[in-house]
Image 1 (cartoon, rainbow, N blue to C red):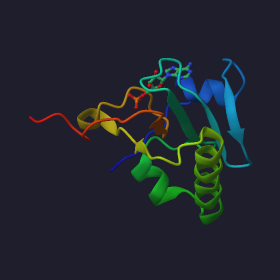
Image 2: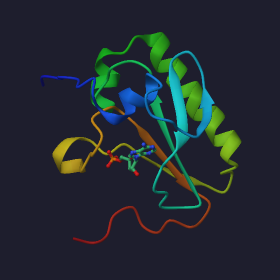
Image 3: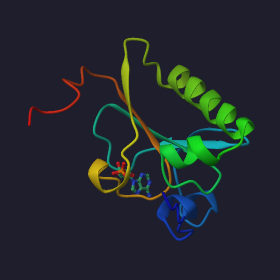
Length: 121
Ligand code: AMP
């Protein structure tokens, strides 16, 4: 698998401060912000600060420190979002996963019952 990161993607622009965002949480390795088109009462995106295209790219290439920092952001976002009753975490990946923005992002969706994971084919 050849991971070819495009630094002009919209989340890279958010990380560089070129596009505004509604920040929910930030640490040295991750940024969490409100999705611009929320699909549930809670819809937060968590992204690593490093140039990783997808979950598998991040898992293969990010340092242990970056991975820990990212997961700490997940923990903090879940606390801030108040999703004790449950939530869904989604990482759409490449064509088959219908990933629109080629910078790894974890969707955290909650605030209502979300239904089954996938519609029946
Ligand atoms: P995906 O299909 O997993 O790549 O989802 C990309 C997500 O990014 C979608 O839910 C969009 O609504 C969201 N999005 C796109 N542009 C922005 C932006 N400028 N700020 C916040 N969220 C965005």
